[in-house]
Length: 76
Image 1 (cartoon, rainbow, N blue to C red):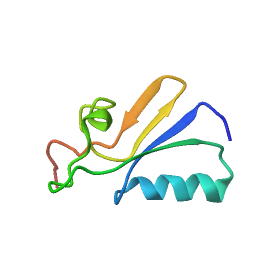
Image 2 (tube, helix red, strand yellow):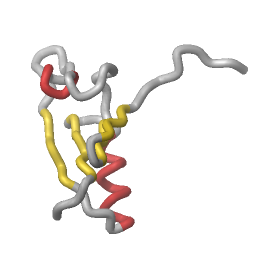
Image 3 (spheres, helix red, strand yellow):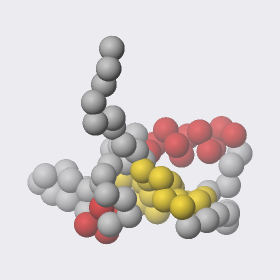
Image 4 (spheres, helix red, strand yellow):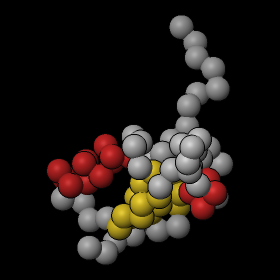
């Protein structure tokens, strides 16, 4: 499959949900897999260069890179 959407998948991460969603909805995507560094289980440098957070999932669509981020603070 070829499209503008690329899922950058870090093994053992939340990005498995994005792959599953695309499969269920029939959305074409390209998949690039990354193995975690041993023994720290951190994302590899190649993955961290994609988005400052270095967390998964990271998707790229026609040159726009979106990564998962957590709020810096929460309010109740």
